[in-house]
Figure 1 (cartoon, one colour):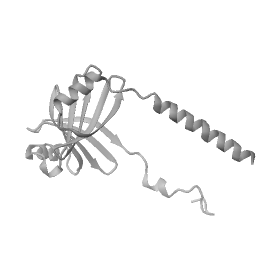
Figure 2 (cartoon, rainbow, N blue to C red):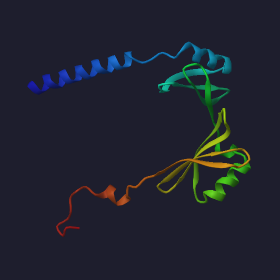
Figure 3 (tube, rainbow, N blue to C red):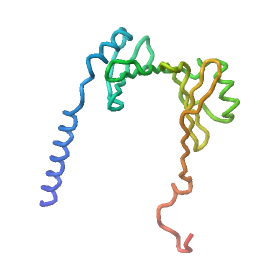
Figure 4 (cartoon, one colour):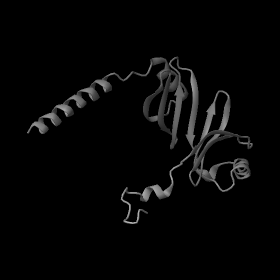
Length: 167
């Protein structure tokens, strides 16, 4: 009975904390909303998130495509990303990827536009390695991020119970 009371109290405290944390969510600044509406008047199903202290991201659909756009608190546009089907990437993009990342598979592709860049953001994968790259339409390629999963597959089978021979 004492355990049940303790669990109830813990659940109540967690619930109150969650409610308070949700209540502290910041509102999207009016300048950001205005800039967004001017640039994307036909946006549908807009969902706002605060990416960083001075960055807001809107996820939405427009013309049947999934899109995201980021603004700073003053309403300054930072970037726009649009979902792209892999088959729709330009031939020069495929050529650049095959030259530098032979054997990698394209997992995701987005058209990306920033004040200082216009092209594609592409996620590549080969075995335990993921590489995120930026590629211009004419094939100029920049590596953005590399992640390597160091976990060995053998570790997945280790349940901590060795057999009698210590193997």
